Length: 108
Image 1 (spheres, one colour):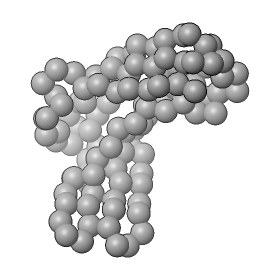
Image 2 (cartoon, rainbow, N blue to C red; image 1 turned 30 degrees about the vertical axis):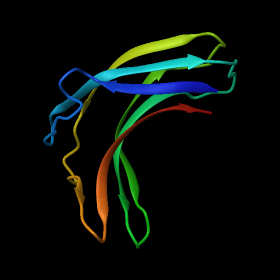
Image 3 (spheres, rainbow, N blue to C red; image 1 turned 45 degrees about the vertical axis):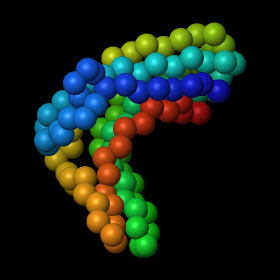
Image 4 (cartoon, rainbow, N blue to C red; image 1 turned 135 degrees about the horizontal axis):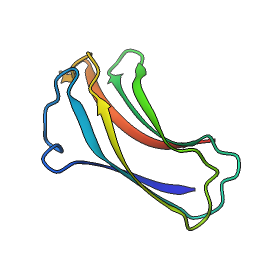
């Protein structure tokens, strides 16, 4: 397995991003065992909904940070720069929430 952590660049953690603006930061990962059959490490930017109806998710941008395989003890420290999608905007009320999300994951 791996511990994956994404960090936004200084000053961007509380920023509001408009469509087309760039979101910058770093992904850090440390692998505690060998992972031979892997699709690498990816950073994905997308949105998701939550509320009483069905949950929806969509990935709108992604970048492959490392091809794999991943070796125990190996570390990854990779910058990222992804454009903010054209929509939907994040919003929340009593019935439904739409949230932007970023995630780093190891693909097997």
